[in-house]
Length: 139
Image (cartoon, rainbow, N blue to C red; front, side, top):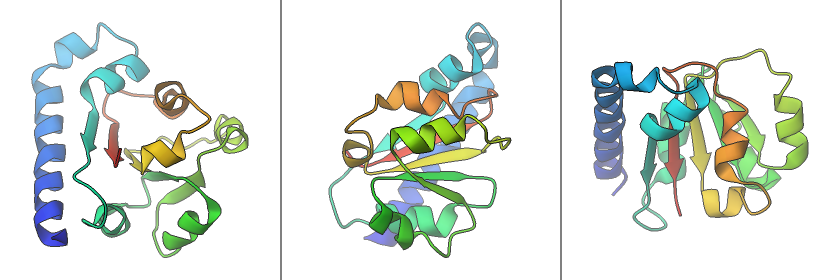
């Protein structure tokens, strides 16, 4: 299933970017963090075992951020060039000091990653411009 999942998800991300280009004038009425949340989020869940984590591992670049749910899951992304963090209050407080602006922010299994934090408020920590994309995979 992973190939089909990859193709669909890549198409959704491309459509999302095209929609943002078409709606740039509307986006600029919002702050970047609000605009990205309203226009720049791709969310997909079709169950377990379809290749969500594999998609992130294969597509994340050094310009991206991956947010996962625990240290063991973080190890899964060890070979990935992206910055990988565990979703907890301490990590998000440290993130306030990151100088990086990530192109894509991937969230792996948000129901597990954001048990203690509000996902929208937490992700705002990383939004600095209108061109960033958030890809949320899972429930």
